[in-house]
Picture 1 (cartoon, rainbow, N blue to C red):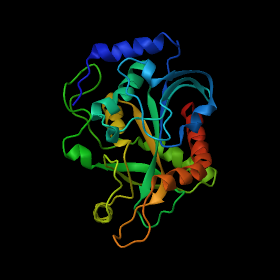
Picture 2 (picture 1 turned 180 degrees about the horizontal axis):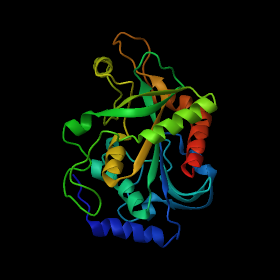
Picture 3 (picture 1 turned 180 degrees about the vertical axis):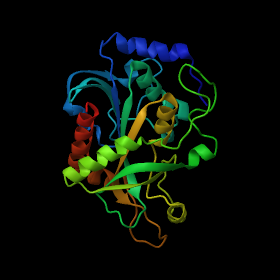
Picture 4 (picture 1 turned 60 degrees about the vertical axis):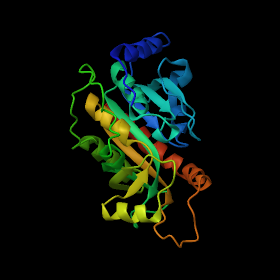
Length: 281
């Protein structure tokens, strides 16, 4: 477990303030191969993670590891182009350190994207799923990102997780999908640490629990954002269908995930772009 002090958070914020005076109101955490959305920004300052004190650096494929702060469709915004994961060896507190920084910078709304495996049999590769709720099996075993030292300046000791995904934001994203004829499911996401893909028995168990998609990110960030009072909306890109039969000839591969991300990016970018524009309304 990693406990940060308030002074460490403030040191990181001071380093960012020394590079840009902009106070972002919108934050985005972009998942595997989805960092292309950063190209929508204007007048942006790009800050590699390794140039910021205490900031975790990403080693995952498809994650550039750069913080972008600038104007996004008329909104002052900060984009994490690539995230860090617990499967890289980071603690939940390290993984969510950037969310605390976003809050201290002034972020009020957070958009999160990820690549996920589809469990719901009605889903198909290339679909998008709006996360309506989650099951945090890692958190149930003690890996909650708010565990440890409590800093009252950053949020309450105990975090309510009903409505962790902001209902009005969900409605806006659904309306955008309908308006632009984008297939968008709404479902339950399960977070597992990884990096191993799930076994067929685990997939069958998750399906019985009511899980629609599974991945290795997002939930720790959502918990800390909820704790910090940030409104969250999250979308999973279904890059592969999880295998529930141990005798299946197919296997899930990293290459399959990257190939399918490419076809999803245009629709996901469209959804995010239109959602950001609705925030002004």
